[in-house]
Image (cartoon, rainbow, N blue to C red; front, top):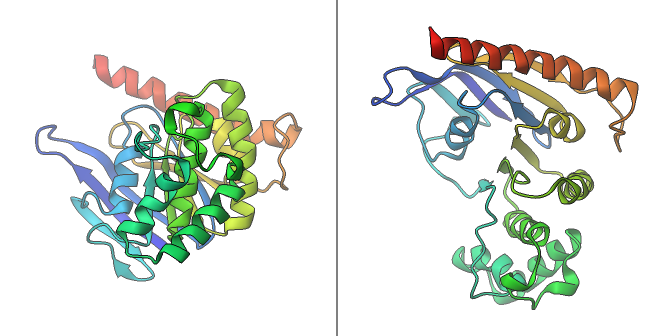
Length: 254
């Protein structure tokens, strides 16, 4: 289990908390969504969980042990797929495994297994410039999954893609989650995306307000975005985010 206890982050040059007094519990195998207005500290929260930064206050625990830096049990996936252009698809997936010292046989087995899971097994030998944006993100996802870490941290992974591609990848990610059985934490500006994928959705408030609410998304899978129950969750969370956006804008003028 991942647990955050009264976690705050302040950067000296800003002089105030970017993230304020956040306490959360995220169970193993859970898909956890995080939404909130721009600048509320969503990405900072991911960086803290990844161990890329340390909290100014509070503690982050993995199975009761403090996170004090990066670890092989956590991996991040960003908006930019960050693939190596001089490598082909399968070589990109194997790169992290090679650095981690896995045998060639293990690298091959994992790379092929996860490329098949993301439906890219027919594109193993394609170069990065030969595949679409959506395929690049699938490759990045396969690379992350191949490390078989406990927690996959995703920072707006679909935000640079067109709506049609994004919708397809959401569907595929939901299917992959059911198979991969990993803890996944998603930061997104899309409330619809968060409700579609998540078991729980946290709303981070503007300024010093910290964590506003955590919604338990009690909907069957696969989820239908046009269903009345789905729209009810979407409206409730969107209304809360809008209040936070308005508060953030008001604070800029005060």
